[in-house]
Image (cartoon, rainbow, N blue to C red; front, side, top):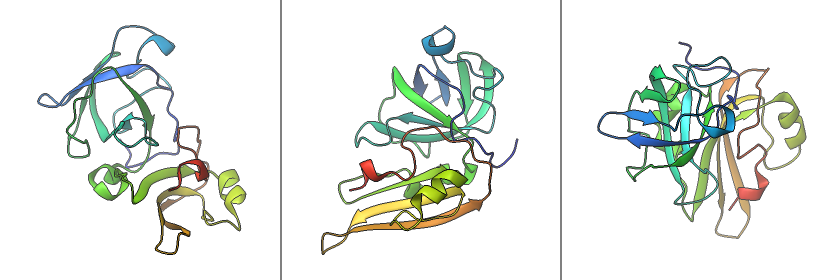
Length: 183
């Protein structure tokens, strides 16, 4: 189990329910778009980060957790619930990435409120080039980004390259540069 990988869009689809007490995630039986396929090639694996809800919508994003083990194609265990909001997660969409594991323990990257937005993005070389000369200008790799509006009404973007690397495969939402969801 690596600490991070190069895929910001692990093939996974469907909806899941989280049991906080047991630290388990379960989804309906099915294949492809009908349900999760945990542990299958090209899908969720141990060490991946699973994100619950929609990151671009306040109140609809429930946080991130690291996959600790996989019991079946529809059931897995998470290492901790510390990166989750505590709100009930039932029949909720999810995304999976190979972002750095340590990010799930840092609440800075799972918060969104009316004052700022803060997330980790897998930024490919193409996306890095697309962002050149903009407020989103950064290098390729796993990048922590915080956006907010300052007291003069100007968009501010803080970026921190957490893991510099090339070869990132992207596709999860929100994408980078994420101008649509900036405050």
